[in-house]
Image 1 (cartoon, rainbow, N blue to C red):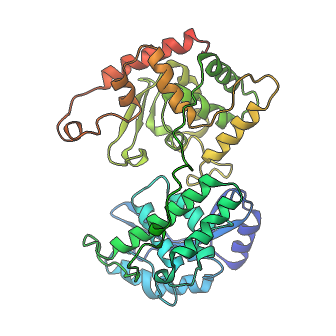
Image 2 (cartoon, helix red, strand yellow; image 1 turned 180 degrees about the vertical axis):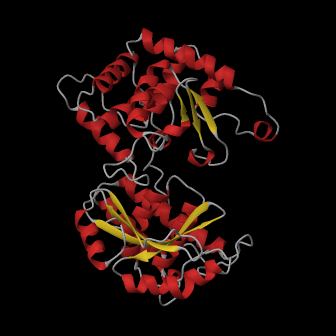
Image 3 (cartoon, rainbow, N blue to C red; image 1 turned 90 degrees about the horizontal axis):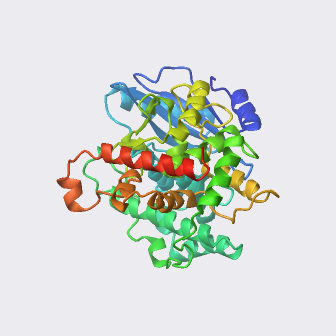
Length: 417
């Protein structure tokens, strides 16, 4: 959809999940201007400008800033005056300078998010929401136009204590952590010799480093579902009782494969080999982002995946309602579906969180007779020691396949068919 002022206003008014506007060019040569409009969980809307380009067949983008702080005319002027000439000269865009060119809190956070996106960090969207987009975001509370170097520990305390006072202890700890990470990056980035250019944010000290971590905010969870509880959840999801098609499929995949929630939600149809019952997860979708991961699939999830592939094709199997490839169903949607199911009259399962299903897989797979090393292999927990990372090149897939066959038998024997 071309970018015009009326189109921007219409998108902000009507967006239900995510919409992308672009200037109509193919992003080659001097690149192109793009706006991403999102409906946030709190009901508010964000509109963010990006510069995007294609070089050697690879797509890249950099965040410019938010609308309406940067107008359409302003964004086009930045493209024409700074970004396009840089791209046409064959240089990379390491950072997009916003008007005023001051090392503000907002600009520093924007650059940090762009860095995370470049590294394909799965948490980039969540960090961007907390630092820049949410109703109670760090940039607004610390001061968007304040110099990043002027923020001190008292400002960070005032921001995170807002979550704490409302009883959101975990959110407070996350907010402190995200601000600390952004400032740590800003201090190191100016000395990054692998980049063509790096701005000096003027930050000499990390203000969040002086704010103690709340060690009680996050505790090691022990909750894992019993065989009977797992069977009740499996059969409710399979029957679609209170679950959408996507939520039910995600839950069945979490039970069947034992992978992380975000990794499961980011599946593309082209990663699934139904004939050989294999899920080939690309490296950039794994938590570490360094090595691909192949998971043998139990027979129970194959019909689930086939239905999704028939419906979605080779693209994302869990897209949001807009169908945009960049707008995936969020973890919170699965959590909300589970919470609703837990409140139904027929449910006999004690409360649990979505992430507890990964621990449940680990625990019940032990009951199926799968040794710990193989369970760790399947869940990407193994081979992190020096010897394994640098020297162990053994092929463990047959061992993982045998384990998943045992898991499939256990599922059938315990009412998960």
